[in-house]
Length: 224
Image 1 (cartoon, helix red, strand yellow):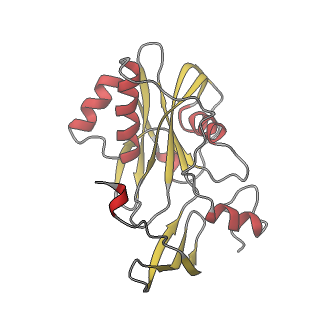
Image 2: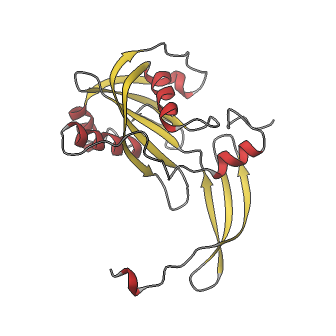
């Protein structure tokens, strides 16, 4: 399509209302100007953003975690991952924290595999997936008394992980994107990006509102 053949509309916002605040998300309603001049409501699920890690050892294996996800009522195979819910924490530091917490691993080499938006029709969540190599064991923190205490772990080769995707055993979209991207990089068909590449998609609305309210450093700790 010739971009000169149509007008690019500016979807300006004429006001916002926060409808719900919960520890890990919020719901905001924006009044958005449509191309015809009308103003319509758009509900947005606000998110902190997240990171995930494809950690590959010297044998070409990566750790997967199996975690119960109540929204779908089942345990899912996933990458080590977590929220960017610490005020001022950059993405690679968050990824390093999650890899240690969920897999008990440290890594010497880090790069960016892929950035993705998970549900852009209604949610501002975006995720940066890293490739971590030159692994070694670290001191894994004790699991809290929640879903993470029920995690299972499994090491698989990158080929086995791809087979798990194609057979329907892995359905988590972040894991699917990260594993396929890692397979491309490890095969030499693509190159990962440096961790210095800006994560422009990282959402800020929820985090900044919590910071402005003095909810730091753990942005999930709402006043009781």
